[in-house]
Length: 431
Ligand SMILES: *Cc1c(COP(=O)(O)O)cnc(C)c1O
Image 1: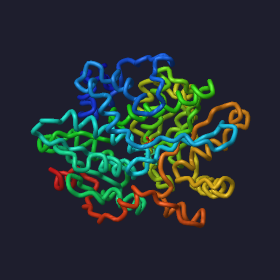
Image 2: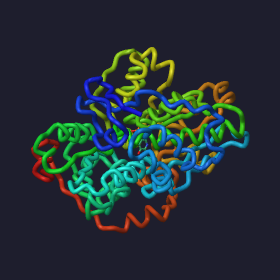
Image 3: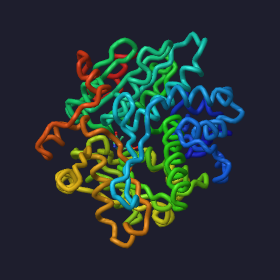
């Protein structure tokens, strides 16, 4: 399969090249030239993620050196569970827990998949590969964990100083070895801009081969599409109904992946994007006018994005707001609503949400009762609440149990370098 740039000004490339480049040379994002269509019967009968992801990866990598390694890649990447946990006895509402990987957030899927691919692509290559990753919290930790100590690969993590939770910061700065952590004096949007500028900078391009692991990287989206494949097939096989997903959304990588899965013919009904107070996308769908703006800080900090990169991929599929509005809906959830939802669902069901997943739980409650009763709703659980214990614990009035993988990370010493939000400052540290 070949991949084109959303901006149409770059040559088409194969799977490995799209992964290594991250961003297309014209500044656009890579999108597949055509959609593999698999009939519902042609997916493997197995239900585990690796078995279902393998034919998906094979098709995307068709004609590329990685196609033959699809099986080993998905088994290397997806080595942790993906539970779909019912929340109500009638099975109409459940939560897809995407937080059982090494850093307890859904970004582990993309990061581990990318690391598995990159390691195989770079085997035997003498030039180092430098992966630049801007993070609003979870991406950087997941990428650092996935690439830590992989030979021939360096990782540079840029995060907005003071705008990630102390728990998240620990995960961004506990690695050392081939991982450099930069605390940028600015916002997530500044970090993202710096990464984009670095890619266009000859000096930085000369010192190493550059790649990105942000949710703009095709290699992040594909494994995310795979869990929508696995989940929608599981619901379809057990009930004969299509699943509807409510997705906590920021930079829109997770939701583009869900759209892609539906595009490939998977049994997916509605897709609801739950945003926090950064309402660029809900406003776009409502008014038809796209007005990117600076991000504002919320409790669901990993979704604090005022100018979502992956909107470009959505607009490539559905060029105006009216068309996109027929495919997805979007709501904005305030900090107050997040707090109340965490308190209420703990009291009513003993369920502890992270602030991001709470936006999905709240978006569900805002649906009309008829729609709730008629659908097979899946809340997409994007992070373990222990990653946001500073927020969650005061609300529920008790400690959140910390999973073992996180506990081990929390015990490592922290190391980072503070820089201004300028290309010159970045050059000084990694040029
Ligand atoms: C990154 C992240 C999101 C937002 O996902 P996007 O793909 O950027 O829309 C939501 N929740 C958590 C916990 C995250 O880490």
